Image (cartoon, rainbow, N blue to C red; front, side, top):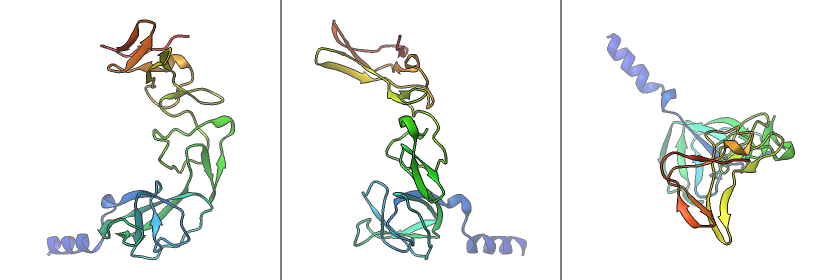
Length: 191
């Protein structure tokens, strides 16, 4: 009897572990409207009505499953069990209530991907592949004449100086002898 009751409860209640999260464009005030993805490549609509209020470009939601649709504006992906999580901002902004504010001195947030919105509430530090303390600069790439190597990277977000940038093994460089490939360990930049 206990097993049957437990199975019945599990079948009725959606599992929180099964919930997925998604960033969408801010296209209105209710998730039951057709809404583009944050990059605009697909469209979504929630079966349930979920009101929200944001003066931001993006929003973050959770949902339990996708039950249909083809992802176009006329046939959006249909999501079930939607919940509004937060308003969201792009990489040069931070979230302040229901609006986004610009970070001063081009300080960028620590998300590893510029194209992914975020919900951070303060400006933090440079992203992976960038360095700086009052502004962020992309790790350099070597060049000679018109030949360029790969851009450098960093071990993680938060690098403060150029010497934390390196070329990964397998990456390319360019100098007076031509273009080459880094073999073995990574190659750090020097001042």
